[in-house]
Image 1: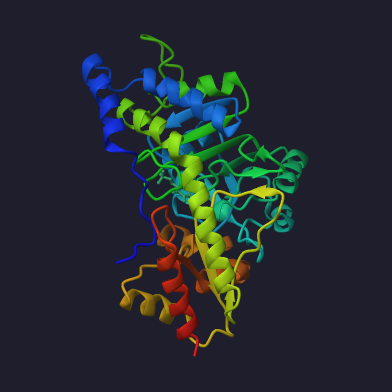
Image 2: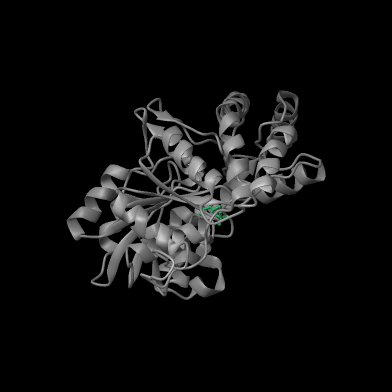
Length: 367
Ligand SMILES: *Cc1c(COP(=O)(O)O)cnc(C)c1O
């Protein structure tokens, strides 16, 4: 059985050493030494100044909206994981869906202005599959209309543009370290903020709003990362470069094989972007002789699990479906992409032989 993804787990002996230290000191959460060390080392690694660790990416999104006091309407994309919109819903905010562009499935900046109303307070784009949004255009629109921008960068761990991290774009960026992500702490996440003042407030909010033992500055939540996961994260940092380079070579093999197959479309890469190779999406076009769903079933029958990621679109789910901006007519490209997409297996321990097998099957099924 080849799964669509498989988490990387650091060597058990090395993790054991951390656990022994934690057992010795009996400090297991609440901003302990490993939490501090991971915030510090990860900031350095990513090239950001202010980073707050979280227990997961969804709570990081929710706290990001809280710290900026976002309300009313937020412009976002339907082509994402549901957590993007759910974070808005949990904050009592109405998501306003804007279509994506056909090149990389990211929010189309040229359609944002038309969706702005007097209730709009922010834009929440997603760097889908780790491909950077047009941050320059989005940030310029936000400035013009005095809107905040929160990037859902759950897929964009260490992605760079012209050798600079994209995680400093907009007002805040959030990361996810869920088991299925390229960098995992089992569950986990982070917010990258522009200044120490914002980070301080975020750190209060993730700990019930406590500023100190007796002062609660705001109605916060509990979304702290614990010491066991922080220590695990420190080990992951040691292996991440190696893991990304393995993914890179597998992605290159996939691309060289798949670009020769009629009806299989790939997302082009740009030379000025440093990718993290978190996903291997392909788009099954009309000219492929079978449908996307048939290919999905066929691979499954061969014990290969691919995923239709993102299908169904967020706008198909009940809470969002009734919103006027969720209509299929408003979102033709996102709807098309959701019908075409298939994410193929990609993880560190996948072998070239397995990639070749998957490509052979995709090639042979096209007849
Ligand atoms: C994974 C993911 C999230 C949620 O992160 P969790 O850590 O699983 O809570 C949010 N947005 C996107 C785009 C994601 O892929």
